[in-house]
Length: 67
Image 1: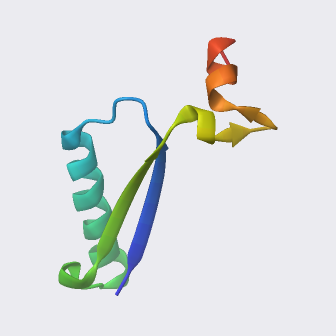
Image 2 (image 1 turned 60 degrees about the vertical axis):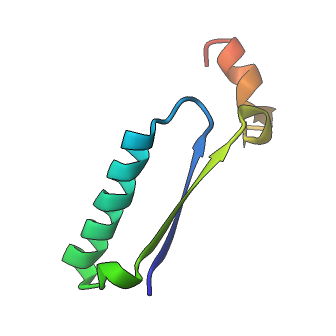
């Protein structure tokens, strides 16, 4: 029973993109590991850029500087 957690910053990921990620990851686990899609869980968490840090800084601040 695979459980995959995908975390992305909350910046306009569309429902279609999420559906493609879920289908693609599920198919990858079926193809590579022989896992049953019926028991494969894929969770997508969208995180505010204020709550995501890189190199000691919030992503919001880094993006405002063009990084």
